[in-house]
Image (cartoon, rainbow, N blue to C red; front, side, top):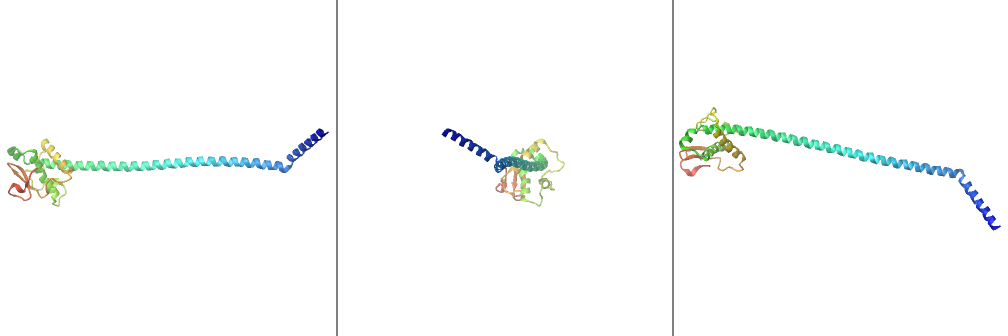
Length: 216
């Protein structure tokens, strides 16, 4: 009898449970829950996609900015290289012009060289005479102009030939002059004396005595 009663109660509970689930507000509640989950899932995917797009956009902008910066730096480097090349070319042109003037100056004393057998140091001293006049300043800014002044350097003529031996010496002395961090003698020694004992520089024209002279 008790067993039969238990089965009746169980069946009654099952019916009440099924009736509960069949109630309209229960189904509506579950529909809203499911819809909410779907919307939440959609929003999550949308946010994830936006983050990916944002990251890619940021990476693209960074790459573009880096490329632009590198292009600017390359342009600056190219401009500097061109400027240095132009400067070097200009300096070489100046050295060439100065070398030719000094070589012509050397040619002017060839008779003294043959007679007194001047050494490389004598030629270096003679070149220093022109360099000192440039350093001393006479209102002239170019070495060839200083050398070409009338009656200033023995035997100089703009039409003098440029012999290789004189040109080699002249270029050597000119380049050393440009590279000097200090001058070996005062710019006041700007007068050359061509003697049988060598070429000397003096601070005064026609000065007597070796004490006031300079030799390379």
